[in-house]
Amino acid sequence: MDLWGSCRVGDSERVRFLLSNEHANFDPNDVNDAGKTPLILAAEGDHACCVKLLLADPRVNPNLACFGRSALIVTAAGDYVRTMEVLLSDPRVDPNQGDAKHGVPLHVSSVLNYPAGVTRLLRHARIQPNQSVGGMTAIFEASAANSADTLRLLLADERVEIGTALLGATMATTAAVGRISAASPADHLTPSHNGRSHHLAHSLVVLLASCRVGPLRIAADLASMQTWLPSKRELRMSDTTPLSPRQTTARMLVPVLEAQLRGERRWCAHCLKLTPDVDLHRCGGCKQVGYCDLAPPGQKPCHVLHWKAGHKQECARLQAEAKEREHIALRHDGKGQNKKKPGGRGGGKKGRRR
Image (tube, rainbow, N blue to C red; front, top):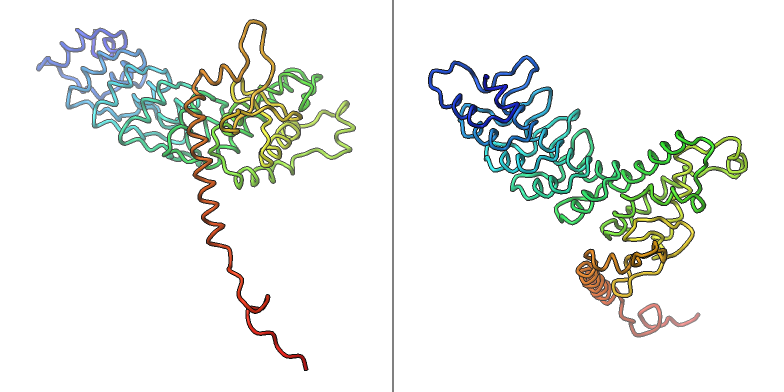
């Protein structure tokens, strides 16, 4: 069996023998009939031992791509964290290599909702968490794919910039609404009466719950979304002419974002359920996240589960950030107040009437 076949099946002993054979006449960077190098084949099979042996050979190029996919992108797409660890331990491996068609490793793991891969990539010293590929960043793509787990990890990294992630979350909701409408044309989603509509905006809720999306960004995206709202005539005719996915999304999300700017919470931080018509009870500590009151039989309510899932630490952080913002605002207001000058409103002696 040659080097390519040995890497494909994960025969590490054969790979070691072939690489150490001084009389072997082959280039370990050549491709087989399928157009793949030995390193790509070993990565596709999650054969970490073979990958390690290949990387130990100075002839092997670890960044060589086949059909636009490097070995690292292959491990990101397969969630092969063990093999990814071996690749990233080699200083020659570029963790940001990729293209607009196949993406880069961090984008791939984020879209596919692989938390372990995203965590390992973010730990790399040379990772670029805000790298844009085709005009899209990892956090935008995670939002657009409704990948809530990886989105949380990206939001927890202070290096990651929010950018247009909220727009990506809106796109994800619109796409989900479109899929349901296509599958059940007669079933019209409404903001409050269809239970399935509550679970189409997970990434949007994760973004709002992170408290990293500022009011200016919310207001800007809200202004764009308000132009999608259907007219009264379109609402009256919706029984015969269904609303478009974008119109349905706007009816669902506009009340939520308007309430967000007023300080209300119309989303549950634990189950990620939207309640466009109901302002939910907020956490008694940080006052930043809301919880629904519904709990399936035999389960604890969302506020208890969320506290145990990590909000205990998050709550203290949010309270500290709120106090810091309050202190900054008080200092700013104190400096901005003008002292009254003597002599009336004008600040000087009153002029004599003539």
